[in-house]
Length: 82
Image (cartoon, rainbow, N blue to C red; front, top):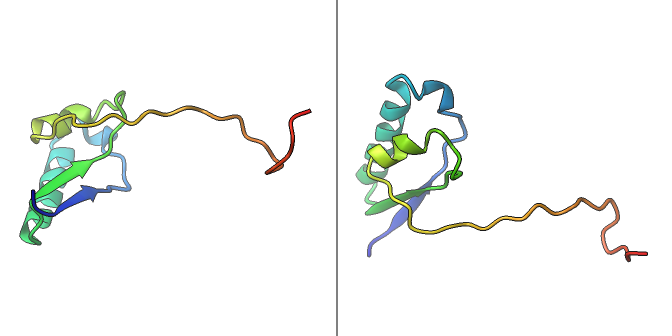
């Protein structure tokens, strides 16, 4: 299977969707990863993220799903519900 890496890009490429910058930035990251011996890459993206199509065009595909649930914040950890 090889060694992989999860890409973490702490920037939003959303403003760059209609330009070529987001695609070029992603390709640069993939080239960098490949040049360092990784055999595959993954990227975490929200299902509703409009930049998802950039990743799909670059060859990424959906492999897993992450299930999430919002939890009400409690200011007291370990407090009992009354």
